[in-house]
Length: 480
Image (cartoon, rainbow, N blue to C red; front, side):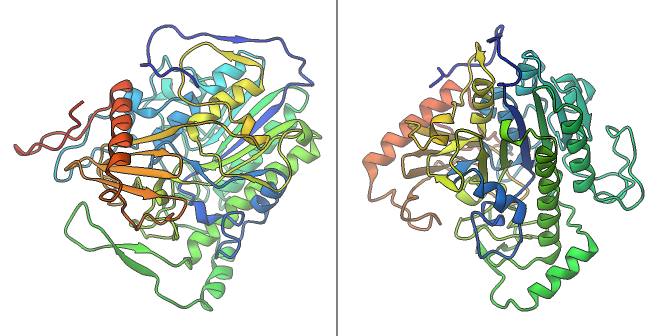
């Protein structure tokens, strides 16, 4: 496993000479706010229909324990681009989320530093054509945008965290990074998929990276009318309790969490995204490059279940976007690697968004010379163990969704959650309690001490920042 160290110094990447016909292409699908239970491979009896994602899983490997590096978007996007924990550069909340609660949040860096090496830069140095479409949200001005971070083409990626201009999910989009406007009424997921497919067709004779980063299924909640009507009819046949109580961290109003999937507009957004995935996958077939293209599908955080319309349920996972509970950080992960993954296989090896960079780099024959946190997961794609000891999370903020400022460590089947307001800890055995309802902290003090010590050492290694004083009140901070 790579040595942990702070970001800084000169980083270089050495590439081995490769035959372009043997060098794999890469297609990355990153969906915004898509929950673990929102796709058919993880939830066959769910409300949403995802036939193309289902087929992708049937042709590759599904990870049951795949994670995002953070419970909100920008930090995870940073980790996918760099292979590093976002805490290393204080990119620990969405850019630029600075909500306070009982205390003030930790300092936030809301630009991905310009000296970071992205996976696009690494591949471009290896002769790859590189393409980005969709949501970026990794910097406030153009020098931070995809076209200046290693991508030859950028369609729609800039500072905004959602489709907030024009008519939002329907054209005209009025997106400053879309040079060509769509005809009125065009649907954003389909537009991004068409552009991605066009790039693949134009570059089918050379190695390429196509990174389709959907704005979907993030708010605003807007669906295609035909699909909304379909799911309204489907929802009418579903009865039962839709919401339950969840703990409250910010504000005084009771917090509710969705416990039943039946939101017709959200379902329409999920299916439209799935159709867009299908369009890109079909282009790989049409261009005769599917057998030499690694396809990776994931999300930047868990499903939105406790605010802003609370459109989805992550049950049996607890919480959702903005929470360090499993509902906020366990996300869909599907990988199809021709010649390596067995069709229809699954793995329970814990993986994380920090692993995308080293896995793609190694697959392309790139020798990474700078320090990163992720690991090459290809052994897991072969059904082997990764021998990974731990994964870490650090979220010293008050999320818009009510999530607790806190950290977490997963070690084997056990997960320790630490609250940053007062330092309380909770211990869960995910193998028997995936819903994190049975706190074992009081009955397993030795394991708590061991995991907490390791978590605090990690805080030190990444120079983690914590909640700040507010109105003279001091929050908890780790002693060492």
